[in-house]
Length: 330
Image (tube, rainbow, N blue to C red; front, side, top):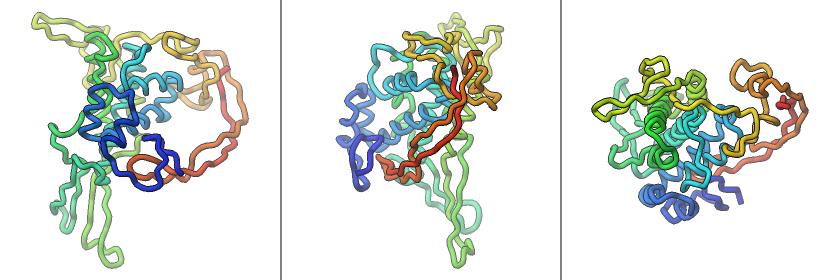
């Protein structure tokens, strides 16, 4: 049967989503995550998929190598491991932002497809004559789980007020990146496409676009420090003494040298990393290879293609073989 990427099951037909189907598949879930899963098994299935979508998007792969991605996945979906995720770096803020964006994107998408019990659609007649509007999300705040609940409180695996504040802002950026790119889609009904009646709905954006938005924020991220006031409040300031803009992605610790192997971060360095010799971004070969140069290789690889998504829990794909020239860091 087809491989189930989300629930690790072989399922021939659309499964029934219940707590036992989802929650017991992930014994590494933390107490809060397991409680959330029991209450919202369908949302949890979408959320776990969202974390995976976020941490496998191209924008993330350029910034973090696969070894780091595996560490982050086990941190977000499960209990804290012996090696927690790296702290304070702008790469950490980006990882949290794009993971939360993945959760928001996938849960919103599932809701708009009518697959979640805890949200629904507004079927009232709105605006243009003969136009029905279905809303993407209609969940009461007290009923829906938050991205922080799904990913876990940053304070559980990152210590310090700076981290809590900067990663809370990373979460707000991720939500903004999804919401600001929501688009309206419409479908006409009537004889010969006359559009006598039109159904419209809010659709989640292509996640690649969300990744690009967050990646630009990463490239323009601001380093901050915490200033404590007499009222015991804490505020973040840039090193030049100015308050950061509310749309900035923030970090408080200078990133280490990712060029070389770093066992503390489980980072293998950039040797062997794919790079883009024609790019002006952080994935260009000069930057990514740290001045060591690169090799051009002809490789043959297999990838999934012509995929068909079966709600909620698995994707059935064909395998395509692709031959291409790639550039790899020395």
